[in-house]
Image (tube, rainbow, N blue to C red; front, side, top):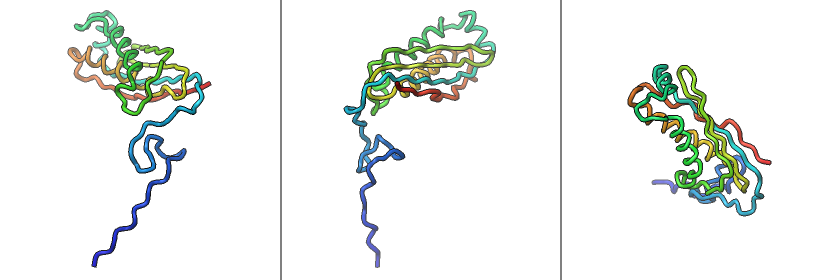
Length: 163
């Protein structure tokens, strides 16, 4: 004789250690930030594109087939940060007050940093991470004709603050 399965219980309401994007029934939801105070918020993310030294020499000389790689990647990263809510389904659309994408070209890598800022009810870490990611993908796309060994690595959040 088969035993009846254990009774189904509803998951506990999300708490500080549980996922905020999951409701009481386990379904995805957008977090309600209506009652959160508007505060100045800032996030900094970073990532690396590992390349052959010859690729970076050509980049420094602006001698890559697709042109001014760093400027295009900078614009792409800024644009992506501004469009994060269109890419990540449960992110809130934010009115960013500042986005900066910066590069440090080393011997075998390009270090990418994206800073995003707003005044609002929710943080901007996803915007900073999206900016870094798309800047790295753009660099990869624009350099792939001369370097098939590239690798995007170490994308992470460095800082998240509110005041």
